[in-house]
Amino acid sequence: MTNALIEANDQLLALYALTEVTSDSLDGTSSVQEILSRAQTLLDADALVFETDTGETIATVGRPTGINPPAPTGAVLTNSAGARASTTADITVSNASGLAARLLAYRRHRPFGTPDQKLATAVANLALGAWHTSQMHRDALSQAIMARDHDTASELAVRALPQWQPQINGAELYARSDPARAAGGDLFTYSVVDDVLHFVVGDVSGKGLPAAMMMTNVISASLAAFQSDGHRGPAAVLSRIDAWMYDYLSQAGLFVTLVVGSYDPQEKTVLLSNAGHSPVLWIDGAKAAVVEAATPPVGVLPLTDATAPTEVVLSGGPGNRLVVSSDGFTEQLDRRGNMFGEERLVNEIINSSDPGSTLGPQLYTALVTHADGAEQSDDRTLVILDIHGPDSHSPDIHGPDGRREGRTGND
Amino acid sequence: MDINTIHPTDTEVELVLHGRFDAHETEAFRAEVDTEMASGHHHLRVNLAAVEFVDSSALAELVRGMKRCRELGGDLILVQPSDPVRVILELTKLMSAFEIV
Image 1 (cartoon, chains in turn cyan, yellow):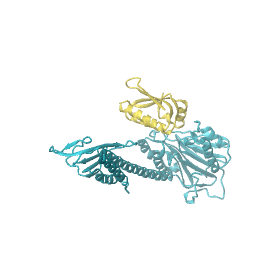
Image 2 (cartoon, rainbow over the protein chains, first blue to last red):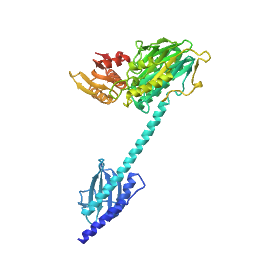
Image 3 (cartoon, rainbow over the protein chains, first blue to last red):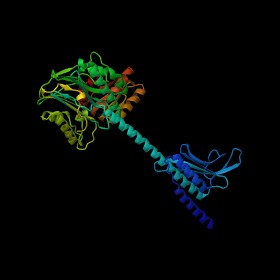
Image 4 (cartoon, chains in turn red, purple):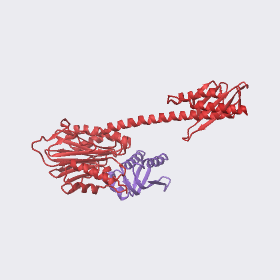
């Protein structure tokens, strides 16, 4: 009885000593190594091995030589020469997260008794806890790095959208894009070439960063095409973008709806070439006309003579307004599953006499009100080109050299 | 969205879709198309009669499937697209890209 009490008391002291084992390191191997080092003394073991349930050794102390393979708990093992080698405690533990590990304890001079088994189990659980903590830390660190990289990439993608606003004599451009996630596939960009405003509005299929990566490429291609082919009109620009982007889009399994346009303040004409984009609206006072797509989105089919882009010519004057949005605008659902819809968009536009710089934010507010807390399911882009007559004292058009803060972010 | 795959004959495959076909459903659709194509079926029919809505991600999956089938000498044919789907196909001019029956 006395011996049993002494042994039980020793085990309690040993367990207390184990709880004192701490590590400043979040490296799982060194933490487990430290636990095993303390446990070796407490268990009076020749060697300890801690391994994953798949057999990967995490840490060892001592030298379990001549013992192969590990044997069932308490078994007497023999070495290759048949001589008595050791006894083994073989403890398998698991936690609530499903992580499992195994502790093998070896001792030559006497077998492991029941108290030893309990102590070994406590050691195994402690080591498993340390290992699990280090794994969770490693996973959290990895996710944090990935999230940071994702955020950086998204920020870079969003910055591909123009951060300036052109100043056009007799016209005003409002443009804004709100991605559903940190970045998205909706795009707009513009450039001034030879006193003509060239612009493009589009929507890369798909969501999130993959679509955003493609979006930045389309913007780059568009800006280059404005320079190389802008003088030939939007259809030529669209053909050039298609020539540069088709293979890339096709290989990625994506496409992009694009409406390419130009506005010449001298001629007061808007030229448009629409590849699968909707809605595109031409507002004339209280009337709204839909500018339909002439060709499928870029990336769907190779261009042929039959599918070559065509142009629409719109003669502008005071009261005319071009409105291009993305489907994420019209397809926004409310909490009952009802879409905002193109009809409501048109009504909001034709019933407003406000300039685009005022109407645009009002439409975004109406969209948020309609959603009533429902998730933003897609990117929302809105571009408005108001034509309201020339100001004779102003130069016709200013590009980024005369830049001022653009209305391209959240108003 | 539910996807029911039927094989009217040994060489014919029809994927019958029900519900809303959007970005949340593209993975399941792609897996179904890839499974059929891996089985040697390059002539796929996608029945859209009971599809209430398609977004651009879903359209991209249909286009992807169509291109893969055509590369292998087959095709992906759209069957009886519902009115909402037909409207989207018309607005995007994708009617001209697909064979529709």
